[in-house]
Image 1 (cartoon, rainbow, N blue to C red):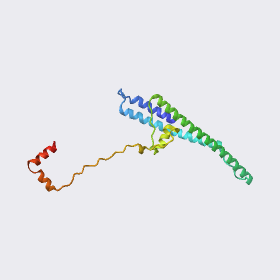
Image 2: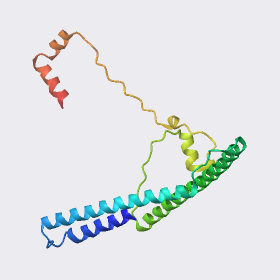
Image 3: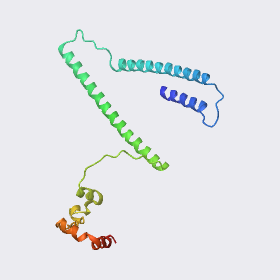
Image 4: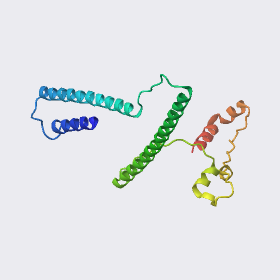
Length: 195
């Protein structure tokens, strides 16, 4: 209740004084004074709410658990008291479990409804995806269900690429090569090879 009121006050403050299109008619010092007053009022309301919750908790505990009178009890009375407290504890645990399961169920329902609202608005919020290692067979099984009975080996269907063998030039005596390339005939061979 308090937080709702505090947020309402803050939203009213921002709506009133932070309009983008219009220049506010209030000075910066006045705005700061209003903001500090608003924060002081919110802290006072927060403290009051805290005290009210504390009083309410104490009253509830006093109502549900009256103070124990252990003096002057016999052994059988103490055992009976322990059994009674045990049954009360069990019933409270059952209630807590039931309430917790209802809360979890309601949270899931709220989340589903929020997701439907986002889908209707067209603003789809993408969930954070986790990286999963999965085999090809499991992936096909997930995609096609029970239709795929045989395992598929993707590596077998890949094309094999043959590397071309590099042309190796014969290693000859370099002196013969120099003699063959000397003179006009050698220059003509180089010119022909370049074209």
